Amino acid sequence: MASNAIETISLAKSYNGLKAVDSVSLSIEEGSIFGLLGPNGAGKTTLISMLVTMRKPSSGKATVNGFDIEKDPDNVRKSIGIVFQDPSLDDELTALENLEMHAALYSVPKEKRQKRIDEVVALVGLENSKSRQTKTFSGGMKRRLEIARGLVHHPRILFLDEPTIGLDPQTRAGIWQYIKELNRKEKVTIILTTHYMDEADSVCSRLAIIDQGKIIALGTPAELKNSLGGDIVSVKCADSGACSEIMSKVPWIKSALAHDGFVDAMVEKGEEKIPKLLALMEKQGMAVESVSLRKPSLDDVFIHFTGKTIREKEADPREAMRLRRRLWGHGR
Image 1 (spheres, helix red, strand yellow):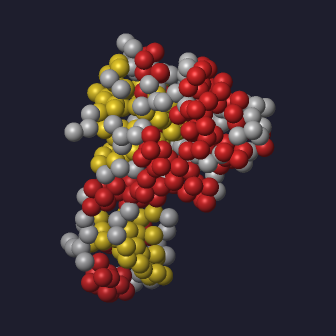
Image 2 (image 1 turned 90 degrees about the vertical axis):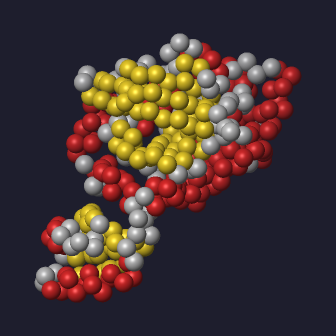
């Protein structure tokens, strides 16, 4: 049975009364790809920053690779790799020079250094670009180099904070392919934060959805989607609020949530319920512009637990204010 790479017990962090992380308890297995999902300002980066010993918890406990994050921070740092959300390469150096500097900082023995650098360069597919200055790299190439750098010292856990943010869809897909490959080849535990639900669904073996500093859902992608039960009938109507109110009173509709001009109704045997739903809307004088049927997604899980899509959460001015206060004050 696999042991746990990370254990947290009621881990919390507050800034001037604002709970950035609120009593989080987690167990993350060795060798897994674990995702923390949530909108900007939800607490993902703050949680990661405590686990990598960049910030001290306000309360609670955590161990990383068996080391206490407060009592043994040096051993925690030696056993992990980190790829930050913001770029942190030296653009004037070549890819090899960036890797050599990092290997020296982490005391990788000289006799093993070159072999290890060659291994991680090959792992992220940069063999033909390793002698180029980093400033000539595309965004995706820089991200791959940062991942290689985070692996140079043989970490047991690699933390990736929004590794594909700002990249185009094709490059993002490539980055995830490299991440899955290094998890398989290096046997390294991957902890990643993201607000791309589709990516987390295809990459993560287990994940937690975090909102306002709390873990609101935890499990494998399949478990979380199956926990909703049934199908999603998505209806676009002129007044989504009124449609949602009508649907919420129907016994065979488990839930009806309005978002982005649509109402998502959770039902059993959706294909049989669509005609009934259309008849109901017609009887109530509600014009239906379109209707579609699908299985639940992680977006639906997020909506189920928060009442909003992740995009709406990020657009919410209160969420933006929380994030600004955190950035202007003490950081994320």
